[in-house]
Length: 185
Image 1 (cartoon, rainbow, N blue to C red):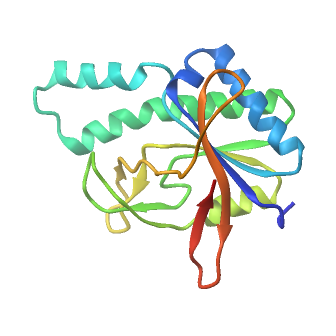
Image 2 (cartoon, helix red, strand yellow):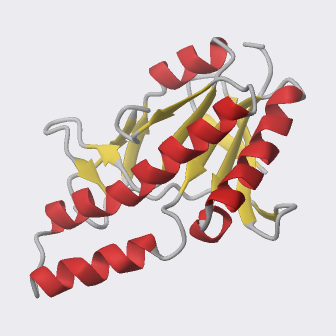
């Protein structure tokens, strides 16, 4: 399996709004894995979770600290990551969840508007090579100097409709000569 391309799919909150929808998304991911693909699933928070967390933050503080707001918002993705991994396991597919920082996403220090500086997917590749699906949240990365979480929403190049009425962004991750990576739609 290590020579097979890596399929990256992003599942938004609508696709993960309920446990039934999470199981349906997991089924789609498991199908790709069953066809021999190495799969990375990037998940958002369930349904309106992010909106609810932002609303609560502003009820507690009219000017929430940006770092703490980022920390709060990543909890929604962590719930989705864990539930997706559990659903995949129930389908008999080995899976592991990582935060963005655990997956090697390196960002600048701009809380709530960070940019991805680098991706060092060492742990991701190790788990993919072991035959596991890797699941991680779309909102966090790590600043190399302080190891904090930052909003670092990856921009994928292609959008297509999933078979469960959910939008899934996806493509094939390719390595190029010189270490450059790209996502091919």
